[in-house]
Image 1 (cartoon, helix red, strand yellow):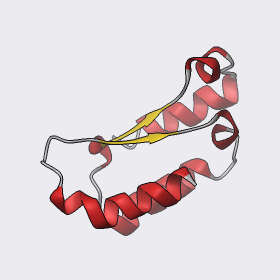
Image 2 (cartoon, one colour; image 1 turned 180 degrees about the vertical axis):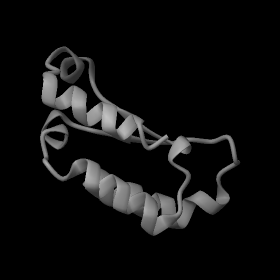
Image 3 (cartoon, helix red, strand yellow; image 1 turned 60 degrees about the vertical axis):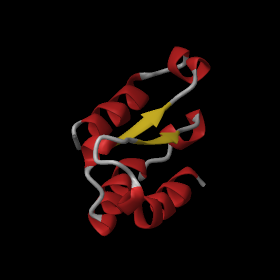
Length: 82
């Protein structure tokens, strides 16, 4: 659901946002374990033309405390988009 909402916001609301504004998307622990999350985010950015430096992901403290190597790799790959 998070990426579906992000897609809609990128396509409909982004033109109205000030240039310095960021779009924040909450990611659950379950979403971080989806194997195609990085690919889906990359595709979303490509489809919408939304600047990656204006997209940020939020995770809860509980999720951060449970981070494993796979999750850290996913977060690193997302960070590398810009």
